[in-house]
Image (cartoon, rainbow, N blue to C red; front, side):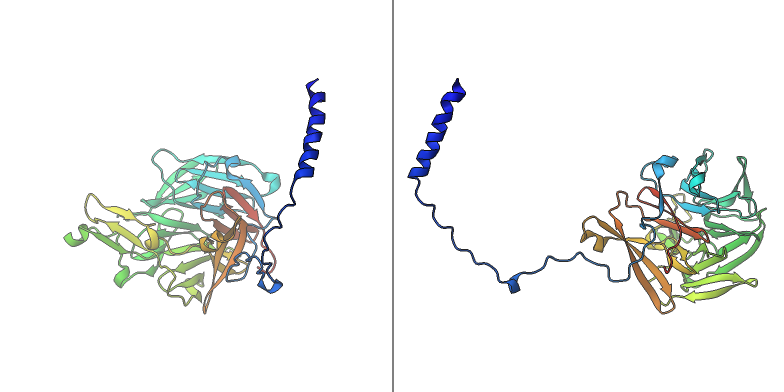
Length: 376
């Protein structure tokens, strides 16, 4: 009953308001901009260099790291490849072995024994076994298929520190000492020293094998020991980047032959810092800031490329986009290229390793497996 009584009243009220209302005042005049005053919306910031497509290429295969047993927010320390497998050094005590092909999409985890700390690794091309090194121990760890492991010590070697990197070929094992008179050693599979190269002199004096420091040194910090970095080219040849002369070398005919020098004095050479050396409070920092490792690199086609970095300045100006920056060494300097990706949820810098079969990386909590685009 209430609904029927209200309906006529609402109609009448509306009619009364319509009949008594005064004409609405005209809206105030507004200046309409002329076409020439209209400015287009600003375009997204573009990087000051060429674009390439690699890690964020839609065709790459992505495997969530969590799905293969990698703890959240992990930043893998190293990657080693065979044609069939990917080995991830997830942290200092865990390795994950992943099938590289889609039909081999299985994984297994290898855990270190208590007290072990691994910092770098490589696969032995002879038998598929793993060689690992630690920044704090002057020894090699050999993980043999079947689960057995052994410690391989280098005879007559004493001192502090350990090894930063390791790379294995048919002839032997290359290791980069934390700090020593020579920045690169080659040993056989029994630990016997075969060769040493890239001798450091002057301000690059070694620290690791010193046993005595002056009182003044013991009260402060000492820096030195500029390292080299290692990678294989797409043919499997061991290549060295020396941070001292900013030159790439390849081992040919029994000696290290320069193949590319980068004339850019801004490239960091790396190094080591020791606080309070020679005292019980000594602290070694082989990865400390600009005094850390020489620049790491991988191969894109037949040319070395330094490991990509996140370009934060440009990315802040483009919503929803993150840029990676690649430095490509050239004789006349560095050529910088960029890659456009979606925003990352985990801002750990990517690590890229390549071989003749393609490339593998970790980015944004994903394992990336891809092949090289033509023309890159």
